[in-house]
Every structure is written in C-alpha cells, then in structure tokens.
Length: 201
Length: 201
Image (cartoon, rainbow over the protein chains, first blue to last red):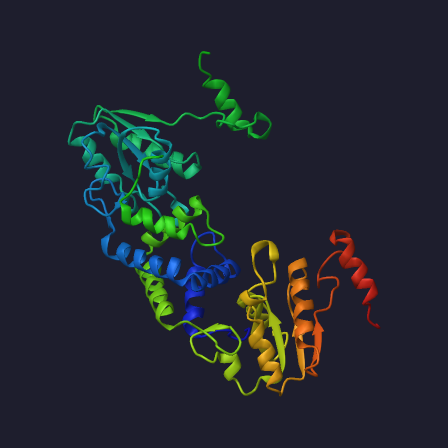
C-alpha cells in the first residue's frame, strides 16, 4: 500500500475516474490533476454537466434509447421513417449509426445480446417491447444491426423467430470489406462473405 | 457536421470529457455512456466527488503542492525531513516520487520548466519562493528532481545559480538503466551515463 500523497477528497476523485472505460489508475491520476489545474475551465463545468445529466437523463420507453426526453428525440421526430426499425444491441451502436448518417429510421435498443454463459436470456433484453411495436402495426422492415459476433447472431436468429408471422420484412447488415480496409489484413470469414455477397460494378 | 444524436445535455458532457488527457472524442462518448448507464454507482458519486474537489482543493503556499489543506499534508508532517527539499516540475512528479516511497523529505513544485520558446521564464515558475525557503535556513540539501529534458536541465542549472552562495548542497537524480530495462532498447546517452556513473558491485 503506497503512502497516500493527497487528501482523501482527491484520492476519491482519482478512484472514481479510474472506473471510466479508457482510463486506468495512472491515467486517472493524470486526469484528476488536469481537472484540478483547470478548475474553472474544466472541473467546475464538468461537475455541473454531470449534475445536469444526473437530473435530466432518462430511458426512452418506446425504444430503450438514452436521452433527456421520453419518448426520445428520435422516436419523437416526425421526419423519421417510422416504418423501419433498426435493432441494435447498445446505445453506443445507435450513436455510431447516427454519426454515420446511415439511415433515417427509428431504432430499438436491446440492451445487450443473448449470452447463456453470462446469464443473459431473452427476458434480460428489450425484445418483448420490440415484438409489441411490430405487432401494433405500421412497421414494414426490421433491420437487425447487431454485432457480427456469436452472441449477436444468436440474438438475431432469436428475434427473427419472434417476428415470424407478423408480416414484417427482416433484414441484417451486409458483411464485407470495411471501407478503406486492406484485403491482406482481413480474416477468411469476411473475405468469403465479401466474395459471396459481391455486387455488380 | 454529423447529426446530434442526443440532447444538448449529453453532448456537453461528452465534449467536456473529451478534454481529459487520455480520452479522445470516441472514448469520451464511451465514457459518457458508461457514466449514464451506471448512474447511481458512478455518475452520481463522481459528480459529488467533483463538487467536493471544487470546494476543497487549494495550492500549498509553501511548496506549490495541490492538496485540501494549506500548508499541504507533506509540509505539515513533522515526520518529514525538513532539511531536504526535492524540487519537481509538476505535482504529478511529486505524486510519482511519493508512490515510489523514494524519499521522506519535503518538496517544492516549480509548476513547469524554463522554456523560452513557450514564453516560460523564471518569473512564471515557483523559483523565488524556493530561494526564499533555502535562504530562511534549516535546509541542508536541495535535490533537483526535474525531467531529463533540455528544459528540465536548463531549469536545474538556473536554480543551481540562484542557490549559489546560500551554503546548501545541491544534487540531482542519477542517470542510468531503468530497473527492469533492457540495454538493447536504451539510447546512447543513457548507456554512456550508466557507464560513467557506474557503482561498485
């Protein structure tokens, strides 16, 4: 146990910062010191922004997105194509698709993927509400934008079974060469998929 | 300009988190999402820890250390050897030496190193107060634990000049092979210094 260099207040700040993804114990100390040095420019505004976040953030009851309104900005936007629902595992995936401007549709956030080993079954995920949204009508297509992992694909198959008979088109993301990617560095599965799903030039 | 995915409250949180060292725009989004998901376990405590830090952190008027008391914990500790002052550029360096348990002495934080190109002269650094501490007596040795960079060494020479005639021993850190280091990966300057400053086995 190394000696405590600073007061307990700073130690606690460091410990909490170290729990953020991307920051370890060492970088958390650096971050804490940076915050303290830039007290007025960074520490005070960040503390305020966190207080605001604590009091204003909520989960959209329609799609599971995180926002400061319920229904969320996307669900409430009339310019969005409500007949298409993009199903994602996590809010981070929704943000990624939105940053890409990939599609102007609605979303549905599952909150994870099926993983029996981790004890995550269908009840742990936001699947029933998705089936309910589709069953209530007005949805023409469900795009399963889950990860290309075993868990993601298992989840996709499970959802496809649940949506069967509801008369909705179910699609999934294309596999292939990432834009800017070099063939030499890609795995065999991706290359085989890229050949199989080749498109007319 | 990509579409804003979330409300302005979350965007602001992401922007501020991205200003932390070690976090970029992408990892700041991930950190924000992590904070929001772990609202009660992480976001609320971190917001509180920051509020506490804002109101309690101060700079030690004796040595320039950052702490929640003034004089700081180290300057106020009677078990510390007050006759030895370790001069560091930054509070992070003080923390590093304390974590190592390298020495049980007092410190003096300069707040940087001399760098004419960046407009950092002696007045920008906490040097006058160091000279004052030494001149007021009771100090037997000043250890210049500055970085082994051009700026650090320039600063060391400047401080040595300022302390000349005050009857204090001035020393600096040893150069050599880092513990655990492999010779093959070390630069010529370090290797030459390690040979020159070799010690009896």
